[in-house]
Length: 121
Image (cartoon, rainbow, N blue to C red; front, side, top):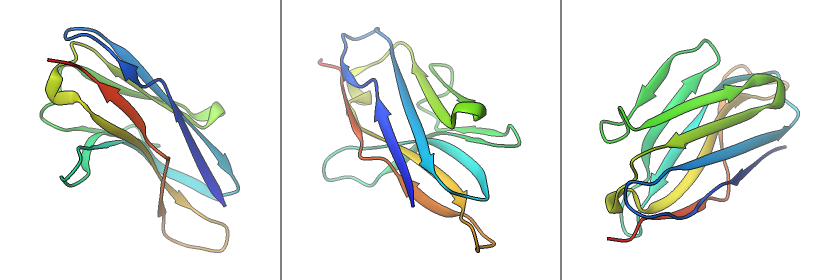
């Protein structure tokens, strides 16, 4: 079993910064990628930023230039540094990991419980 635990969400004024962290624990063969998604009530969950173990990154258009994803592979941790936050960034942010479990050949998706980020207008 794989568990993802996020931390670092909260309330921040427009233009402020937050750093989200997510620690993965469990047993697996390999981690293919880790990243962050967000979801606003009533809307689909959307990609914010993703970082593969090979070092490839992908950002949403709204995250480019303001957010930065990084990983500490030794600690199985992924971070999301968010700068210049705006009210439209308000959402629940979910950690995601694409992990190959023991006995399997392709990665499965695992999710954290989510952490709220609120930027009041």
